[in-house]
Length: 213
View (cartoon, rainbow, N blue to C red):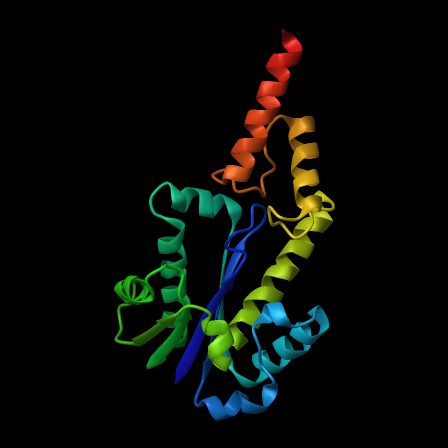
């Protein structure tokens, strides 16, 4: 078996990060799927492929909440956290070769980091933009993206319109601003170790001090 591994939500300030692994007996199994990096596909196409991938391939996912990411970052870098999660899905699938989208400027170093978290032998092929190069990693990208989108939809039902969760999304920033204005603390679904959150809190504090004087 070979597998592809990718993640979604690494840079998000709200909600979880999802790591997905997709295992196949051979690449011929997915040749006709029309797989591409999830970012190049429409939501409906991702959903269609997600169902097909789940039906035809072995799939493993790991969902890491915002609070867990904050806790991990007190002990390790975010890249190390991702590498450990990559190893977790690889271990669940037990392939002979794993293709991973490198989360390090040095892909060879990243491969060694992932391998260090594995207890069984596995060849790790680590490359930048692997989700565009290897269809099996594209499949993992799709599974990770759809799974995360569903998690964000669940959070939106509980917390209201939170947007995509990314700092570049005005709806996400508007939600964070409004929540902090009302509660004086970030929401439970925010990654409090993110600079986006600390900057917003600092601005609110500075604004309060200015109005006081």
